[in-house]
Image (cartoon, rainbow, N blue to C red; front, side):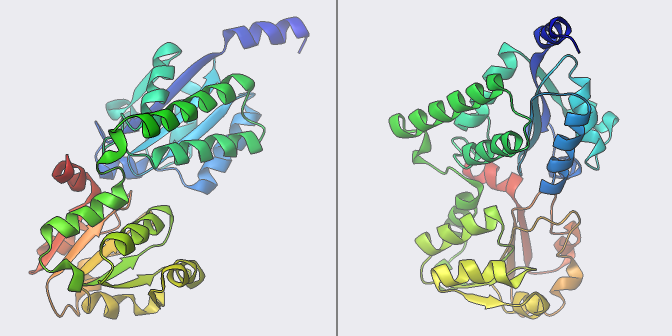
Length: 311
């Protein structure tokens, strides 16, 4: 490509945001468009093949979004649908596409926690930072988008330090702990089992230890080593994945924060229940099957409901 042609192409590039979030897409639909870390890397690789010079992918429990500098946002939409379980028809029903200034405004609102399911959620800025860093490491972040995200990070920092926005419930993980404290009698003497020690799981453990210090907390993860790292930090009990069902049977509260693409907890996982059980599902897609509602003594709460309770 000649220098003149390259210059003309760059001038045609516009900054777009395409995606969906909790406002129009329920947990099931968000699960269809959830982008794993491996899929995010594949999107970056394919974007490079398509000569997209700058792109970043954000996928959290509340949203899946792609930010990019392209001539046509349909390129970004196709990438999202191609690397998730969602279809173009489903995307069109629940999605949004923002261009240039509108896209910039949206990115600032996301980074500030103003567009979060739980207002003032400051976990989102770390997730944004990581997504843009992943793009930069892959050589898929131009100077325009790098300056933009740095401005968003600076604005988020000022909001946190100079306003009272972060004084309330500021994350899904804290919302779950707050729910337990407000809804469960004698919560400090309950046996709590946390299944899944990814980012949300780790943050939830930190909040549990901080706010419900006397509770008996046990951790289980498919990969035991990951659970051991967190357990050693907080001096908590660790069990193997094979012990999941008997451990659930002895628990009062089960918090599920896994990243599986299909439910890992069903009513058949609860066959040994010995007492009433509160299940809090912090996963997207949902990792607790709705059929657990058929069991007497089982209460299931998903993160969408948490946001309604804590609003």
